[in-house]
Image 1 (cartoon, helix red, strand yellow):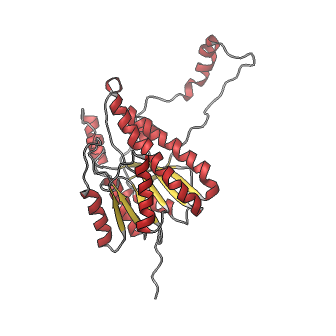
Image 2 (spheres, rainbow, N blue to C red; image 1 turned 135 degrees about the horizontal axis):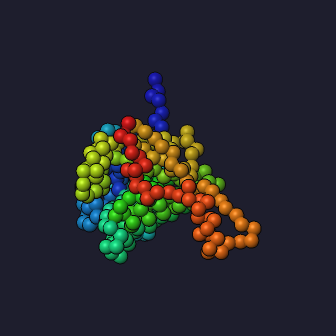
Image 3 (tube, rainbow, N blue to C red; image 1 turned 180 degrees about the vertical axis):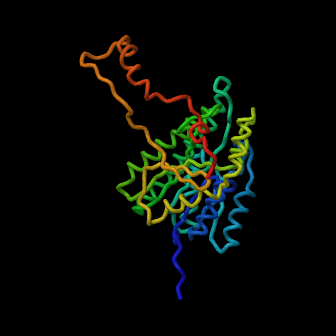
Length: 306
């Protein structure tokens, strides 16, 4: 009697930042769904410092102990050539490449007027350039195979806003643009590209400073949301049963959100054209009711996790 085929059976997934947190849960979930997994993790701190091969090795062993197949890679996503090596390793050691999860990330939180060039460059390099590097290296394989799935990790820090995260927010919103462009450019090759914005207590989120009672309450709510809640939608989106592409999904505990994308809210017109004075007198007052407040993620998602 044959067993039921697993959702990702026969597929190979490259998962960056897979040694801890959400990335680890992705790796285990994808392996449990039948995929072979290349576990990539530099093993650095949340600020991107240092190296440690043990986290990736431990995840690969967990996969093998549950009867799956995994290989490890310890390179940095910030290197274009290293990203190509990851793809080559997936092909040579695991026999192919069907799925890429761009999960690697670091934080260098600091209020904007004190942010250094290094704070900016390091975060953009890991999140945005890293997502480009790995995606670009994989795109050639996906085009040849006429199939493939990308999942990119974004954040409400970019989609909505947060204090002290200009570098992180810019990188994460840039990833949304990258994902949509990949979805458009590669749809002719049956390649899917989607974003997930996760709400979960992880090592990176654990570095959020607690400055007052409100931030303490927010952190306590985050602690109730485990990282393993994020993986099911990623597995589903990467399966052959899903043709969804170009979307942004939020996952918070047992809730799944379809996030909005920028569209016009209101327009004003003057047949004679605009002057600075008429903009101030007419355009801005006419559109003011649709202006956004200086919201943060916690202001928009103000109810407790369900």
